[in-house]
Length: 441
Image 1: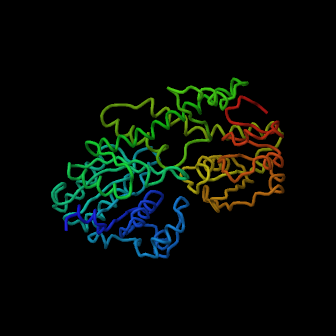
Image 2: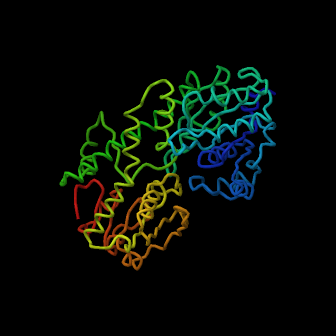
Image 3: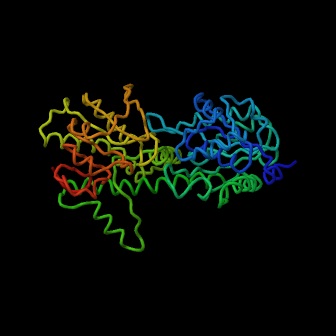
């Protein structure tokens, strides 16, 4: 049976390497649509969770995951022994950067090496990990070609970037359009076909490099615009009397030519923080410097330090000795209503405070039961009026929907709000310090 027929008749076996925030939802989507799925991950706990029917991603409904597991449609392993039995293999591994802001594609290379050990004719490989242009053809393909098999003839290869937005209730894997760029025309056709089985709209492009660059553009677009409002928020605080949040609201009334972005304590998640450096590194190989893009990344990376200075200023106004100050951090995840702590600005602020000698830090997050910062473990504290009254300052790093801002402001002696989460609170505003509000305590 041809691969095309297997896909159409749901007899193709789907492999997913990397069972994290991208890989597991993808595997579940295929499993829910009748395909047998097999996950591979180096994290033994994730593999155990999958095989024991335990869902560990909040965005996936538990009943949906359980139904797939009970039907025997989803399994996982820590090794690549079963690669030869898979028909389509998605690579959904992390792509971090080094301390020197250079791309670390080790996970992609390891995944390609693992696939090569069992690569056979008729398989389709789709890289989804966010990366720089020419990764698919310049890194993955040469590894696979060492087997003697040839792309477009013996096996098929494409790039189709992930578009996961944790916590988004409107757009999921199924209804978010996906871009596909294959090495050959046949590669693109097959990759589009398999994606179309679970995704409403599939957009083919000329080649993998177009698809790779499109992903970088999507995220750098956000990085640049967030940096713009972050810088303006700092200016509003410096100038005084100008509330950046009200400025954005006013500008948003223009029905064309403007899209609102909002300031915050920094950039979190996997892609937006990392992508500018992936592109700038690649650009240097062509004697090209992406100064504008790198500057935006620097502005965003500096925000946790700016927030730290806000907290210090607020404590100084109150006359509290810094090292004795008791600080409560609200929100450990990088955005509201999710459990994802990757590159969380809140944790970066905690790290800075620990490095500066703050000894009494606590946090609360209804989605994140525990975190580790600088090898120090923290457990989420129960958010009560007694806890709020016992601390010297509350730092709002993530504006979770579960937070009762009126209660928080009422009992907290001081609030540093970096998300404008207290915008509807009327009582006690004299003790609130909002990022970009142009107000000093």
